[in-house]
Image (cartoon, rainbow, N blue to C red; front, side, top):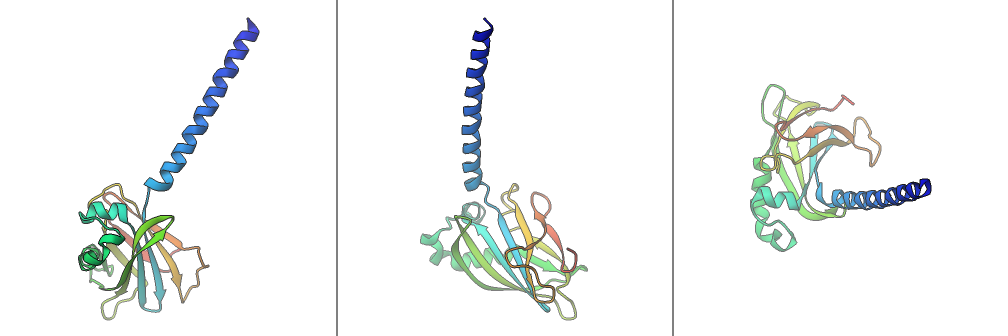
Amino acid sequence: MKEKIISKAIDVFSGVTISLALLLQFVSSVSAHSMYQTAVLLDFDNNKLGAELQLPVDRLTISFKQTVDKEHFAAEKEQLRAYVLEHVHPATLDGKPFRVDFLDQSIQTVEKAPYLVVHLMLTPPKGASVDHFTLNYDVIAHEIVTHVVLISIRSDKQHPIPANDPVFLGMIRYTKLTQDVDRFKR
């Protein structure tokens, strides 16, 4: 009787172990493809500030309300440019807007998935600095409240940052659609 119980327990344990392994494999494959996030990478160069936006095209398609992919990209370039500029508004701490210049955009593979990569130049108003400002940002997030936007400083000519090790500043998500950007707070 005791041997039967032990044998049954081993069978149950083996079944649970196999089920758990299959579940973990499924979860890891799903998370690798379904949790795409936006990255905003900031590059400081004295009082100039470059920004690279990495926008997952699956989420962008939903918020832009048009299919975004390589096939449709040429026809949508100007609309995408306007869409991005409508949703990126850096400002000084007292609310004066920065000028946002659109440099370029292309569809690239990031983290094994298609992303729209956009480059912007953010220029503070006369007499202001890029050292500390508020980034008002809701590309994709205005439409998809669960979308996550990670804000980081990728490079800073005055205060070197190790290559491939951006300084994480914060996250935009849900009702938090602004991020305090302090160049010196690390």
